[in-house]
Length: 330
Image (tube, rainbow, N blue to C red; front, side, top):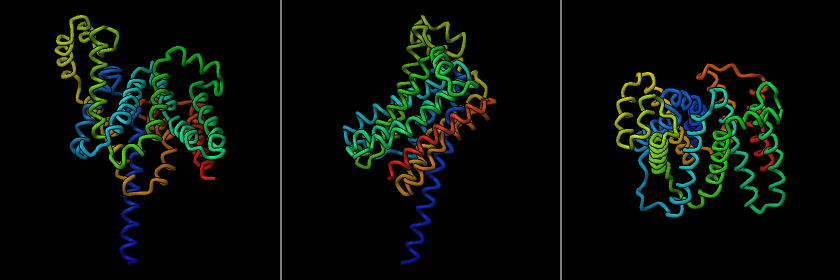
């Protein structure tokens, strides 16, 4: 009996460790997506990443039969998942600079705080929302500090930085809100079914449609002058020109695409395994370090020298999430 109990504990600990690998992989995601977007463009880069990621998931994490999936989960959960992934991928690519892409990643990491606020709002527990507000204030202050740059907690500077290029910030916040809704409402809908491997191809198709449409109408960044010239020539000309251009890209650019796909798809695979077989509470607490890890990884990958206020902002985002967790346990 003791031997069996020990094996179960070891198995759970190993599964938790695998689940926490997702945190490490996801912390690399923002920096890698930015590098791919700089090589292939803000719309083409994410499309290539998610194409590779969808293939990897279908090979290594094949979904259960579609007939077992609740229809409500597929429609609502799938829609939120696709919106979140598309928004985050495009927001990083559309950032004006590498430093701004790191700021946008912190906006994305407001989702744990938004999730706690939403869960508190729908729980009908006494004082649940009141307990969630302090953490939300701390995390939001962290974003303002980071976006304010060297000025620190300066609303005017942060507002100016956002106003100069509002779309990626809006996409990141909308994505964070969508993911918080997904995290709160889909577990009861899913009934144990994990649709990640099904949703990824939908994200891929959405990103390809966005890239092709923006290229054809001339409103997107194609990543090359040749591809830009095909904007008004129709979809077939755009795709034909695009095929030749992406084939000419260096091996290093394609390796970055693969690494980014592994970081995103591998992160989901590890997280899913950890949830099923490990300690969800341990993984949840560890995930609050993701904003700081992501900032550090992005700074290394993008060769950025970030200011002290920026690092302080990242710590505040993580601290706000931890504060929410501590207050909710009361």
